[in-house]
Image 1 (cartoon, helix red, strand yellow):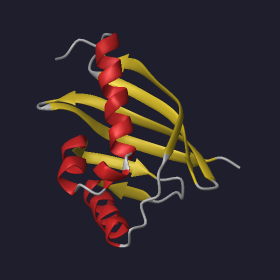
Image 2: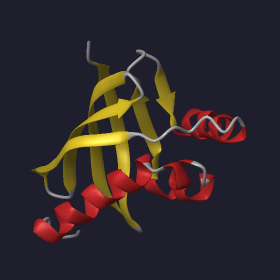
Image 3: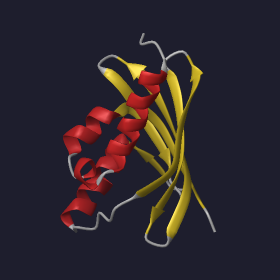
Length: 122
């Protein structure tokens, strides 16, 4: 199990940024590497996604060239248990803003996101 020091927190924050980048979102192999097989997301819309449905949505987004940049504000990380890190941030995509939370776990092969939730901000 990796030690959760400042360097580890920085690594996980870098992975969160990478996962939101248009380049990574268009690379299904890389997204598959970053999301755990048992990944689940509760989107800002309220819809629940698993890893396969996220990959299909991102594939569709890339095919339609509909991957506008996601701005990340107030990104921070906190160790919540050994090998478990919670990341929180605020996203802006056009006029749409949401508060976001991700849970990253150390798994064989590295850090994987296991849960993500977005809540729309009005």
